[in-house]
Length: 238
Image 1 (cartoon, rainbow, N blue to C red):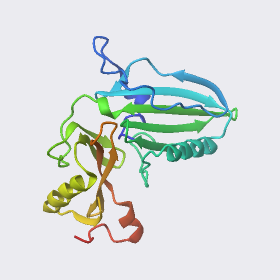
Image 2: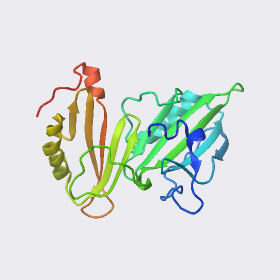
Image 3: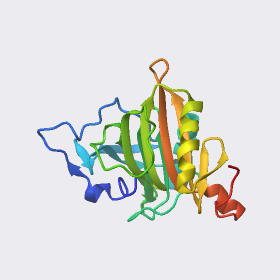
Image 4: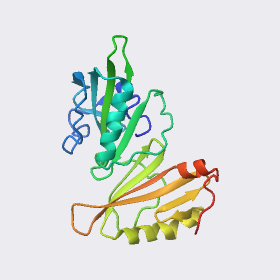
């Protein structure tokens, strides 16, 4: 899901420094892959990272066809309540069919892609990126809620994203973005969604494990609804 994070992982991911834990996913394994028709499942490396982002990558071989495997994981991600981008654009270096999803509670990005083999089996690449423990990167321009904690910014397949936690209500967080985003030309089309020139900012909030705390993801991405309607995303109700 991150731009280039796993599509070129086998080439670009590097072993983490043996003297640090930067390349170790700090949460429990976020997803049991349980590959249907599995013939083989092999981990790629032991401590991988890409631009400070901890990764876990597996190569799998299955008796199932590629389309059936991708449909299987798409359905599993939906059942788990993960965010799935409504429109998937080509990733640099990856033209293969794929499924991407974001677990916005654990802040783990998941990606599945693969290709058919001559013997009728399918090779899959299965990856998870621990967004919540990426080493600090430069802010990506999205405004940060004043009381935010554990702020993380990262590139996603469709644009930019910001995550944080805050002791606030969802209404308070949306009101903040309703106040600050119009100065940049954004217009609110619906509660928590702001549009401008074919792009959209979406504010996604879920209750955290701690009482009174929200986990928030702010996504700036392609405005799929505007493309379908042909409006270009430049209008909306203030």
